[in-house]
Each structure stands twice: as C-alpha cells, then as structure tokens.
Image (cartoon, rainbow, N blue to C red; front, side):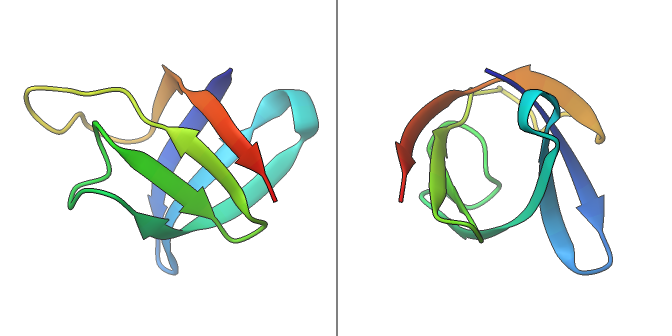
Length: 69
C-alpha cells in the first residue's frame, strides 16, 4: 500500500491516500522508523521499508499493512 510519511511539529505522520487517512506514528520497532514496524494512532500497523540511510521527507513508500486494530 502506498503511504506518504512526513515530519510535522506533532511528530511523524503517515497519510494513506486511498483511505484519505492522516495519523501520527505512536510506536515503532526501530529507532528511525525504517526497516521495522510502525504503529499509527488509529491502531494500524505497517511494515516499513528498509533504507541504508534515512530518506529525506516527505516521502512516498510502499508499506505492507500488518494489522487494523
């Protein structure tokens, strides 16, 4: 699923265009977000792609949704 990740004054935010959904990242497996899972404030969890170096934001990535709690 294509998602856009950006930094905001509140924290890291994920936008899911197909759902018109904007949520903050509230938990993450790894520091720096990339290469592990990220949990959003609505309970959704995404497997984030791995990068050798953290990319510049905002960035659109293909992430796999793991759960929809």
